Length: 214
Image (cartoon, rainbow, N blue to C red; front, side, top):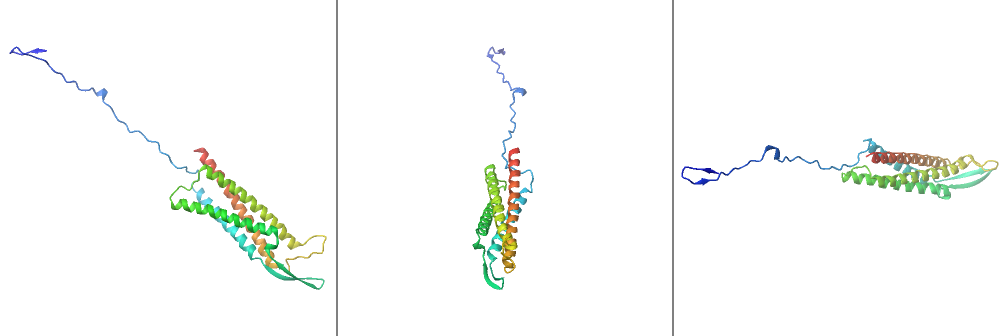
């Protein structure tokens, strides 16, 4: 309170400014960013596509060569001419090879179409953990099935080429060279498809290890 000359009292009003220590400072808060999983090897996706495409091509070649291996010939035994008709559908082992090669080509084509869909939609090519496990199981099943089918067909092809020991059965590949050559090429393509599917299974394991480390 203060006094002025005319006798009236005037109350002094004071305004207090906030101190510098009480000023609030707003700091930016970093928001969590979720990134898509990136593989440890950036070029692994290209290798995966290449192995899938190679497995598809080998399986299709196996089917085409085996289906095309039809031939007719004449076998001469002791001066007797016996007509021969060679066809892959006459053997259960060759039928199994054609069926498994067709199924393997369909499986590889489906995976390539899935990859193409991701590329068009600009989705990361890296599959999720569940998808990787499904692909790993599929690669194992089809690689083992192709190996089994190729082994069974190779036994039949070798029997046609060398005949049966301790019997008078001749070499059927002499009057049927085209059938035996195309069958052998089809079996070789089946084994190559098996190798590429096994390589894809190894790539799946690398995907799983990359997803686990993140």
